[in-house]
Image (tube, rainbow, N blue to C red; front, side, top):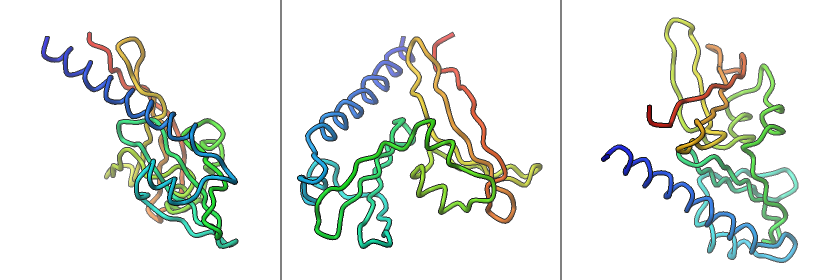
Length: 164
């Protein structure tokens, strides 16, 4: 019973975070909203990526519990240009063999976890791509890096989250 209650609480908390993000994204308007409005809704970014055109892209990763990473671009005029949710199939397809960890992080945001596998000599980063519920299992996208810190391969796996 305790396990079921804790799983239910975790589910509700993760749904609450997604609901808050949905409302925040809906209320912000590219070309109109300001950087101050973005920070009032999302808080300080986890990472700021400076772009060649003078704009900055702020990272708001919801990993490890959430399956979202918002990359929000602010122009040099401090006006919102774009909100992009990066945990999706289109962004996963952009991860290519030979990319550096910084390049992958800029695409997908901070991973849910990082693990080193001694026998394979690989570091694997993973992102939660679909939250598990009492009905569905959680899905993860993975990126394996070789000993030089370059993408060697990508993959996916499913972790059972339902009670047995």
